[in-house]
Picture (cartoon, rainbow, N blue to C red):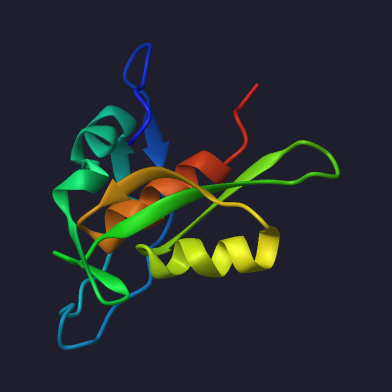
Length: 121
Protein backbone atom coordinates (compact mmCIF):
# COMPACT_ATOMS: atom_id res chain seq x y z
CA UNK A 1 0.00 0.00 0.00
CA UNK A 2 1.06 3.58 -0.47
CA UNK A 3 3.26 5.11 2.18
CA UNK A 4 1.81 7.67 4.55
CA UNK A 5 3.24 11.18 4.40
CA UNK A 6 4.17 13.08 7.51
CA UNK A 7 4.92 16.71 8.15
CA UNK A 8 3.76 19.83 6.44
CA UNK A 9 2.47 20.17 2.91
CA UNK A 10 5.30 20.27 0.42
CA UNK A 11 5.01 21.70 -3.07
CA UNK A 12 7.01 20.11 -5.85
CA UNK A 13 7.91 21.32 -9.28
CA UNK A 14 7.25 18.42 -11.62
CA UNK A 15 8.88 20.12 -14.55
CA UNK A 16 7.54 20.13 -18.07
CA UNK A 17 5.48 17.10 -18.97
CA UNK A 18 5.54 15.91 -22.54
CA UNK A 19 2.62 16.66 -24.80
CA UNK A 20 0.36 13.75 -25.64
CA UNK A 21 -1.39 13.12 -28.92
CA UNK A 22 -2.76 9.62 -28.42
CA UNK A 23 -6.52 9.04 -28.80
CA UNK A 24 -6.76 8.03 -25.13
CA UNK A 25 -4.93 11.15 -23.98
CA UNK A 26 -5.96 14.28 -25.89
CA UNK A 27 -3.33 16.92 -26.58
CA UNK A 28 -2.46 18.84 -23.41
CA UNK A 29 0.29 21.31 -22.78
CA UNK A 30 1.70 21.49 -19.27
CA UNK A 31 4.18 24.11 -18.23
CA UNK A 32 5.97 23.68 -14.91
CA UNK A 33 2.96 22.67 -12.84
CA UNK A 34 3.27 22.95 -9.09
CA UNK A 35 1.68 20.03 -7.28
CA UNK A 36 0.96 19.60 -3.60
CA UNK A 37 2.72 16.41 -2.57
CA UNK A 38 -0.04 15.78 -0.03
CA UNK A 39 -2.67 16.03 -2.79
CA UNK A 40 -0.71 13.59 -4.92
CA UNK A 41 -0.41 11.12 -2.04
CA UNK A 42 -4.14 11.40 -1.43
CA UNK A 43 -4.78 10.31 -5.03
CA UNK A 44 -2.85 7.08 -4.51
CA UNK A 45 -5.12 4.04 -4.34
CA UNK A 46 -5.12 0.78 -2.42
CA UNK A 47 -3.77 -2.04 -4.62
CA UNK A 48 -6.69 -4.19 -3.44
CA UNK A 49 -9.05 -1.79 -5.21
CA UNK A 50 -7.98 -3.02 -8.66
CA UNK A 51 -8.54 -6.46 -10.17
CA UNK A 52 -5.89 -8.34 -12.11
CA UNK A 53 -7.12 -9.20 -15.62
CA UNK A 54 -4.49 -10.90 -17.70
CA UNK A 55 -1.25 -8.95 -17.40
CA UNK A 56 -2.86 -5.62 -16.40
CA UNK A 57 -5.44 -4.39 -13.91
CA UNK A 58 -9.02 -3.24 -14.23
CA UNK A 59 -9.28 -0.35 -13.95
CA UNK A 60 -5.86 0.36 -15.49
CA UNK A 61 -3.36 1.41 -12.83
CA UNK A 62 0.16 2.80 -12.71
CA UNK A 63 2.64 1.89 -10.00
CA UNK A 64 5.57 3.81 -8.56
CA UNK A 65 8.30 1.35 -7.62
CA UNK A 66 11.34 1.70 -5.34
CA UNK A 67 14.56 0.09 -6.55
CA UNK A 68 17.51 -0.16 -4.19
CA UNK A 69 21.03 0.09 -5.56
CA UNK A 70 22.89 -2.68 -3.72
CA UNK A 71 26.26 -1.07 -4.47
CA UNK A 72 25.68 2.18 -2.58
CA UNK A 73 22.37 1.62 -0.75
CA UNK A 74 20.61 4.44 -2.58
CA UNK A 75 17.02 4.14 -3.74
CA UNK A 76 15.58 5.39 -7.00
CA UNK A 77 12.06 5.18 -8.37
CA UNK A 78 10.47 4.09 -11.64
CA UNK A 79 6.83 3.94 -12.75
CA UNK A 80 4.68 2.12 -15.28
CA UNK A 81 1.65 -0.05 -15.94
CA UNK A 82 0.94 -2.21 -12.91
CA UNK A 83 1.87 -5.04 -12.47
CA UNK A 84 3.73 -5.50 -15.78
CA UNK A 85 6.29 -2.80 -14.99
CA UNK A 86 6.95 -4.32 -11.55
CA UNK A 87 7.86 -7.64 -13.18
CA UNK A 88 10.11 -5.90 -15.73
CA UNK A 89 11.94 -4.05 -12.95
CA UNK A 90 12.32 -7.23 -10.88
CA UNK A 91 13.78 -9.00 -13.91
CA UNK A 92 16.25 -6.16 -14.50
CA UNK A 93 17.17 -5.13 -10.93
CA UNK A 94 16.26 -8.21 -8.85
CA UNK A 95 13.67 -6.40 -6.73
CA UNK A 96 11.10 -3.62 -7.02
CA UNK A 97 8.74 -2.56 -4.23
CA UNK A 98 5.40 -0.93 -4.99
CA UNK A 99 5.33 2.41 -3.15
CA UNK A 100 2.25 4.08 -4.67
CA UNK A 101 -0.48 3.06 -7.10
CA UNK A 102 -2.45 5.56 -9.19
CA UNK A 103 -5.30 5.46 -11.69
CA UNK A 104 -3.72 8.35 -13.58
CA UNK A 105 -0.38 7.92 -15.41
CA UNK A 106 0.49 11.61 -14.97
CA UNK A 107 0.14 11.26 -11.17
CA UNK A 108 2.55 8.30 -11.20
CA UNK A 109 5.01 10.27 -13.34
CA UNK A 110 4.80 13.32 -11.05
CA UNK A 111 5.33 11.21 -7.92
CA UNK A 112 8.29 9.41 -9.49
CA UNK A 113 9.84 12.73 -10.45
CA UNK A 114 9.34 14.11 -6.94
CA UNK A 115 10.80 11.03 -5.26
CA UNK A 116 13.86 11.00 -7.55
CA UNK A 117 14.56 14.69 -7.01
CA UNK A 118 17.28 15.29 -4.40
CA UNK A 119 16.21 17.26 -1.35
CA UNK A 120 17.22 20.90 -1.42
CA UNK A 121 19.65 21.94 1.32
